[in-house]
Image (cartoon, rainbow, N blue to C red):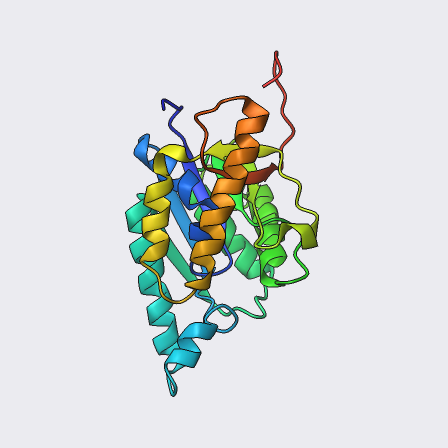
Length: 242
């Protein structure tokens, strides 16, 4: 598939949020030659590492963090992306002006054309909407002059919010689907390389098939077998309908 090369930035609250929710999209853009970067705000060592804690009695926070970091680095590499860790604490993730501006600087340094992050509502996981709102605030700062005079403000960025684990709880109604049929095996291989959240492997394998079924029905393209779903933050504007 030929697509325009982009600069894709993914900002996730926890170590492997990017893998489950948009791993196929990452692989798709990376294989096309786009530069893809992931920023993890936390390792998810408190709230998203239950299996690690249970399977390793006496393990420390630092040891859990190293496990989560290694898995994130490994899977990002398998998908073709670079990754950076902010190393903040999760559950509860707290954002303030200083952290938001730090994230804004990262955006200006990378200059994304596409930005993927969490949905702005999720009562089941406080860290996810906190991340989403921080990302939108940081992007606003990154696009105006004077925030960091030594850096060039970001231009227009296409923002998409990826699917929560339980979309029915949060009112997630996707209006954008990415066909990941060609790279779904890459995503599955990356998921299967993990141990910290193994229970999600079957969930997101099935989710790719379900979203693929919907994408096939919507597009009338029978070749679509797997997809990932998003909510588009920016309304579409063009000479013709997209």
